Image (cartoon, rainbow, N blue to C red; front, side):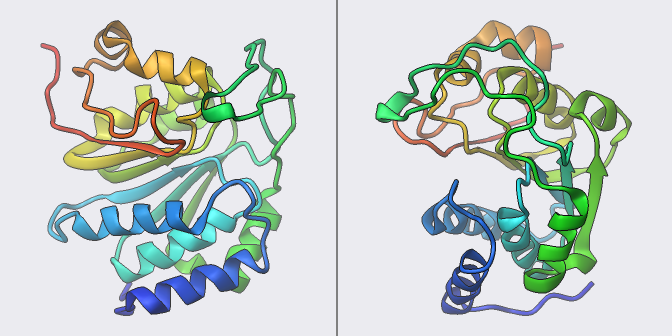
Length: 227
């Protein structure tokens, strides 16, 4: 796969075009561009794919596919494609005066695989995308490819844990993780917990940029594994 060399203006225009045609109300263009800038900094000789966990209607997926195409990388998308799983997590007040409105309801934020693929085919770069349909705990254990970047937008603590458990060990040292869920207190508390990182992920807790300061947080994997 050979990507096109886009200017930042080209990228901004294309993201605007996608936002006008797909429901992208849960992220901003600035958030998408920050992920793009971070991807651009990853050395081209660091082999691995880009992962998205949680695609909703495919707006962010279409945008990430544009980034991946330019950077000659594969975009792998994990989603149930039938919304949030059944859960008993109690989420109420978010950080930064964000209204969460109680528990995340089963089936919310749903976009079917056909709908997502159709949107990417129209507005993104479908040829570099690979899709894993199903609950994370069913699809991720069978995935075993090098990763250079992960973007999480999964809302639940349980889903975040599953993504990190199976994907973080595959992330190359120097690779990046972005999470759209930095406004959700229960997820923030989990990410702050060094015991969680040691016992459930097997790596030392990374320095997390923006934690308790911004909605979208990020961190770089330094490779410090517990032996």
